[in-house]
Amino acid sequence: MRSSIFFITTYFSDYTIVPAKSKSQVIRALEDRGFHFEESAEAYINPAARHSRGRSSTSSIDPLSPSTPPPATLSELQARTFALLKQREVVPRVDADIRLLHCAGRWDDNNGPPGDQTGLQVGLTKCLLYQPRFLSLTLTGSEAASLLLDRRLMSNFEPDNILLGNKELVPIMLDLEALPLQATGIVCGVVGKLVGGNADGILTRAIEMLYLSTARAGIVMVEEKDLDHAMKALQMKDDSKDKP
Image (cartoon, helix red, strand yellow):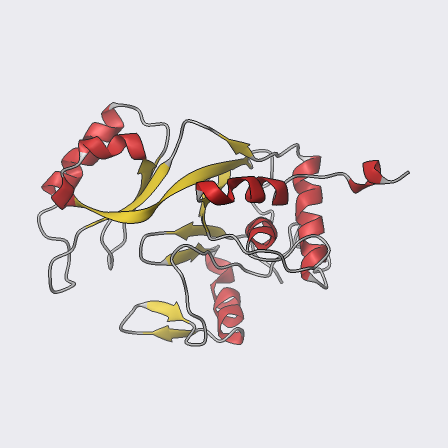
């Protein structure tokens, strides 16, 4: 059995959002790959992995319907994913005017709940009044607010209200509205291309990236220096046109 997922990378953690009926299946998959639940962190941790906040995790799920036999290899999974995206005319798109910053609200010195959040709330309100072209806000009960926002919106915040990320990111948009909600393997197929595997199963230079799932899109975020490499990796190439 396989499951569709949504994936959100925040300033502090990675969140995999799954249907309630698939919870036990996903937990089993994580544990099979060396993850265990750590009470103090309230999260699944893989002690064997050194996780970088700039690099997303993936899940080995194929992109077709749940009745489709699972792919035997990473290259097969990627081929299925990109065939589906091409069939639905999904192409990666970059807005040259948008550059994102990854930020988080400050916590108090004891790692407790956020203290005075008025400045953060006022800044967010100002951002919404200007109808931003890109703004993602993640709120959880155990972490400070995490934001991905257009760098031009930073003027709405006082320096003491935001903890800045150290990298500027370029968003690559994949409009997934034409895909069924239960489609699986999109995250793994797309991200797998960027973190090391190509369609031939050969490891290439890994790209540090973030991934954000929304109701209608998948958004890959990379540094400017990696943009060309990422766009080439995400091209929906028809290999038959290269054959004589």
